[in-house]
Length: 394
Image (tube, rainbow, N blue to C red; front, side, top):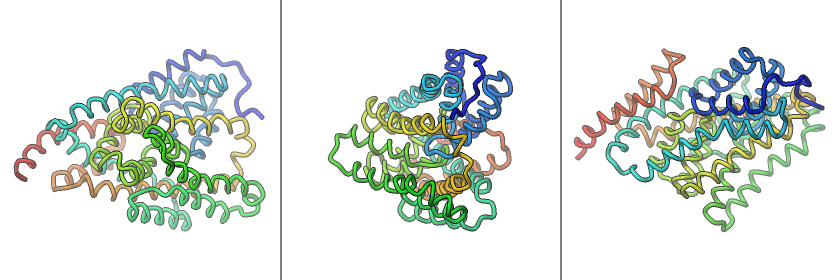
């Protein structure tokens, strides 16, 4: 059963590729802003995509694990040009920001020891805490509502993330299953039991694979494939999962390097998840960046393309929606917990505390203020303040 319109497209595949390339190059603002740009440009202004197809793509992207904006872009490429369109749209959307973070990774690896870069990231790290805190607040108020069970799932994941300083993938699945069973037990048991069992067992299988004696690139590939396959929620939802693996489990990066990696994602356009390219570069050079990006984005590509023909038929089932709501509550809880975890490493004195607080207040007061503007301002403050603080400490 087709999930897309049967009318002939009013644009070429090349035009779609150029659009996605431009959006990936200049699209700041995070996943919510990026999906908004796609609707404005492709539905309202150019009329390449119908409102119905856009909404179905957005719903599918919200249901599946992986980066929201990238998945929607892949789906919109699929609408008229199927597999080829999805592939071209996905690559052209992700490629610009990937090249940027690799370049930044090279500069960071070669010049990260310089005092000016340390000073810049001193301010940026504190601003990142404020940005994540505001994102967690917005997602919490938008997602949970008055549903008590969703609040229980949310608070549980927040507490576990703070306590373990990592993200436990099976708890996400458990949150979805509990909420799905609560809302629609007969349909869930009849239609989703086998699939849910397979998904629930998958993190355990991935854990076994990650424990094998693989080469460094193999370990990177396995870990980032897990990140792409089991992280629900958009944008910063991947941060606690990455922290748990990159810092706590594998010790590839230290706390400061990880926060700097998140900051790099904030100052570059495209999906926030592209920080995996920066992390991969620091761990294993260009090959590590490519493997990390491929591992992260390949699952979201498959999770978009494979169910696309069947989504109209099954995507609106109450049990499916309930499962997604439960997983989303868990993801938001993990983001909230990660604010505390990262703050303990980045807010180290009163100047960084003031930067983090000022970031929250600015984002609260000026709703349209873009995060890259704050990050750049925090870098300038860091350049001015860090030498004074460091000198005083000596």
